[in-house]
Amino acid sequence: MKCTIFLGMALLLSLTLILGACASGAAPTEMESEPVTLKIAVLPIMDALPMFVAEADGLFKSHGVNVEFIPVASAPERVQIMQAGQADGTVNELLSVMFFNKESVQLQAVRFAHMATPEHAHFYILAAGNSGITDVAGLKGVEIGVSQGTIIEYLTYRLLEAEGFTAEDIVTLAVPRIPDRLALLDSGELKSGVLPDPLGPLAEQSGAITVLDDRHAPNYGASVISFRKVVIDENPEAVKAFLAAIEEAVEKINTDPAQYAGLLAEKKLVPPPLMESYQIPTFPTAGVPSEADWHDALDWAQSQGLIDIDIAYHDSVNADLLP
Image (cartoon, rainbow, N blue to C red; front, side, top):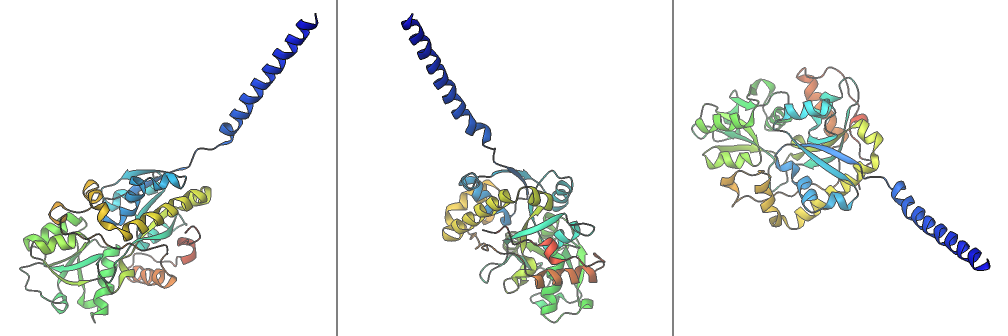
């Protein structure tokens, strides 16, 4: 009888220990939450290289955030995807943020993405090889191919105004698609046009002449990383983790850019004819556009009739998430 009671107590104790172990093992799993997934709309442009490096080197994962890239082929497609809420963040420019925020604050710029340096231009104002234009003065009254109402047209005005041009001296022609602009320059049908890096150097290979670039005025053409405000409000720690990964990626690129030459080809960021000679630019470290940058772009947009209201800088630019 005593043996039976002892055996029963032993079995009960064993069962209690097993159940306790299972419970203690299950509790952390139930309490742990999955990392937030941020969906990022990306164009195949040099500005996105730090994002691709962060993905390739596992930096997003190491900072505790999942990132899903949504490839887009054009700026209008990027806008549509962001407006539909199908992406959480993207690389764009201050003007794009302003247009989103005309009626209510939908986007916030949280970091510089890319900008010119004294050694490497971000945008080029070029003249066709057969145009006869050899310097900036030759652009007065000449149609310059741009995507109108964008950062490209804005920086074209500002760069030429710095050279003494008046508004009447500057004539822009709408050529929205960058490949069309490049082709028209190559054929000579367009006397002048504005192209981003690395297509500016590609046009030079075909005989175009760079008459002006933004190396000494980098803020006009700076791109930014932007997130929808609802995403920032709901998942600020995920956005912070994303930006921490970007910061680490930028440091790696700036320290040893040559190691990412293969990634340029894989992501088709540089045309094949330039691959052997192209030098990866230095990327900006943590920072956001200044209030002066914001108001200069806003003043230009208002002067062109693109925006008819004031949009507050502090509603649209958020530096609080930077590492």
